[in-house]
Structures are given as C-alpha cells and as structure tokens.
Length: 292
Length: 267
Image (cartoon, rainbow over all chains, first blue to last red; front, top):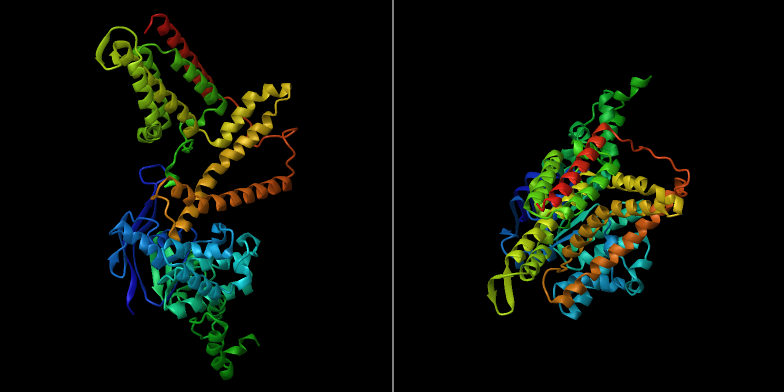
C-alpha cells in the first residue's frame, strides 16, 4: 500500500512560554496509506484532536513534519491551503458549523472555495448529498430546519463534497441514536469504497472501531503507544484498561471466560467472531461442566 | 490564535497577591489610579513604578506577559506621545514647518507614555490575579450599600459574572468554528476589506446560534436550581478580611500619602 500521509517526529506544544504551556503531542510517528480505514482511540486529552488537526495543516507542528504524498505540507503556503481540500476534516459536532441559507449552499461552500466551475460544484454537491442520504427536497431547505441527524449528515457532506483523498472524522457518531450511528458509518464506508480514499476515524466506541477499521492507533499522553489490526490491539486488554480505554463487549466476555478457566483465545470483537471461537468448545462439551 | 489573547485573563496562583480579598484589590486599584494621576515629576512616577514592580514580583506574573499585553496599546501610546510632543509650551528646541518641539513637550510625552503604561499594567494586575467570580463577588459586596437605593446590584454582578464566564467559552467556540471553516477552505487572511468582512459570515452565524443556544440552556439550568434573584441568597464562600488585607490597605494609604507629599514639593 502506498503511503499518502506521513507524520514524522511530530510534537506540538500549546501556549508556549505561558503558565498554560502544555505539550499535547510528543514525537508521534505514523503513516496513513491510500484506501485504508484507520481508527484512532485514546482517553480524553490524549492528543487525538490535536493530531488530526495537524493532518490537514490547521495546526503547525512545534517540531517534526507532516508529509502528504511525500511533500511537506508546510513547504509553501499555497500548498498548505490545497491540503485542506485533499485532506478533509470533519470536526466533532460538525452541525454547529452550518451557516448558509440552504443545505445546498452549505455543502457547496467547500467546493466553491476550491474555485471549481458551477457545473462541477453542482455535480459534487449532489454526489455528496447522495453519499450521506440527503434528499433532493432537503437540499433546498434551511439547514436549521433539519433534524439533528440530518444536520450532521449535511455537515459531513460539506466535507465529502471536496472529494478529499483522506477523510478524517472526529467522533462522527457522538450523540446519535444507534440507527443513526450505523447509517452514518455506512455512508463513510461507501465514500471510502467509491473514492478509494483513506479514512481516519476518532471514536470512543470500541465496537464501532472494531467493526469498521483495518488498523487501529492508540494514543496516550500525546504519543501513539500501539498500532495494529483491531484483533491485535484488543488482545492487550489489560493495557487498554489501564489507559482508561476499554475493549469491545465480546472481547470482555472472552477475557472473563479465560479468567474462569475456559481455554479460549480472546481475539474476537464481534458476536460472530466470538461465536466461531466458542462453537468448537461447546461441541466438545469438555469445559462447560464446571458448574455442576 | 485567538487563544493567545490574554486581555482580562486570570492566571491562577497561590501568592499573597492572589490571596488578597477581591474588595481590597478593587479598592487598591482605585487608590493606585488616583496616586498615578497625582504624579507630577519623575520621582513620583518612579515611586508608582516601584510599587507596581513590587506587586508584579509578589504575584509571580512574568514581566513578559505584562509587556505582551501592553502591545495592543502601542498605537495609542505612540499617538498620545506624538500629540504631546508637538503641543508643548515655551521655547522651541527644534522647529520645522508648523511643528515645534519644546522641552515641556518632550516631558509631557514621556509622562503620558509612563502614565498610560502604568495605568494599564496596574489594572491588568487585578484581572491577572483575581478570578472573575471573586471579582464580581467583591464588586457586589462593595456596591451593596447601593441596594438601599434600589439599584439592581445583584443582577448587575450576576450579568457581569455570566459575561466574564462566557468570554473564554466563546473564544474557544470561535476558534473551533474558524478551524472548521478553514478545513473547508475558508480564507480569512487575504482579499480586500469587503471580501474579508464577507468571510466572517461563516463564523458569525454559527457563533450567534451557539451563543443563543448556550444562553437558553443556562437559563434553564439556573431555573432548575431554583434561581430567583438576589433576595435572601447566601454565598458559598463569604468574603472575610485577613490581616494581609489590612496590610495592603495600609500600603495603599502610604502610597497615597507619599504621592500627596511629593506633589506638594513638585516632584
């Protein structure tokens, strides 16, 4: 896989030289490849939000480099601005940034800033609306008349309309109901598949992470402490718990079974995987008799 | 970034200056300003500057921070200095066209610069070392005699504390909205005045909406906690003078006395 975003020895210090000085990131190294779905987890204040704001050049590193396609994004100011369109960042609660009179105009804000032609903007707005499931009728409505979930979709469409190569989402499902969560995640996966884009998703829901991402990065105290496939990362349950994180429910169940003396690996994070692991044991029937 | 705006910012600390009663600090600031305006000559300015330096040293606020906050006022300071420079009386030292520089002009310019800087730096010390809540508590307590005249002292101080409380929140919010719009390619730095003003719309609309939403939520939260105005309301932390407050009042009185004496001698 070809790397698209490379972060090298990145450190960031907030409010340097004041009593509020605070190192948010120290020496972070990581690579995001084309088309990959990466999950970013970490305790509140572990530096996730700071990290993602470096990925599209909103924050300037105190030291270290951010490379896009092998080129330093701070090399020249014009390139830094271009990066904002190539690396789309959806903030937490993005619905609070809606400002235009119609949903259409709001989604068009990004593409318009890119300086695209009217026709191109129109196709992009409609395509983006299609990805997130906003209907034709809703496009002409005021964004403030939409429901909470639809507002969130409209805001995400505003970033998707720029058709970025890397889409970063900071807790895209926070505060939504379960159905809304699943459908937004599906929208994101659809976009990823259609554009062969890389996706970086920050989330506090281990289930959401486990069932969507290819690779997982764990942040703690401003450093990336673990990275790997979800099954790999979630096998370090004890460490995750000590960081104030958790593992998916199914992994917890298996770990508890291990503690009770059942010989089963804890490398599952969905119900299906757990069922696959437990089935042979149940058929064998050997370890289940301890109760009697 | 907007976060670096330190105007009216509070730097928490445990120094004697931080621990002073807010009422003491408010009164002392007034005394300080009066003393400053009594100053006539270098000697008295030196006394005031020494007093301020002592306060800064005791509060452990870095001098760099104080100076940084004078920076936004640099324009006003330079402007007043220039105006005073050219409006002096007496024999001109240098002259060109309609401008003439006199000895008294130079003196006045220097004094004005000193006066403005000392005034601003001194009043900043109040907000640096006093939390907004303590400040409004102190103000309410100092103004409470006016309640007899049916002045809405409690309401005013409540409004003030809410306003102060929300300044950092709104700054943070503005920062966030700006970042979000920048992420969509918004450009706030280039273009002419009109296009720059237009670029503010994507910030102002969400900001106003969120401010109204917050106000609404706050009102509900206050009602849920049975807020009904100042009548019969007790305080969590009552203000009590300590011995250090009397000491501070004493030093304030001493400063004022020294300034009056110096003024008599034209120093």
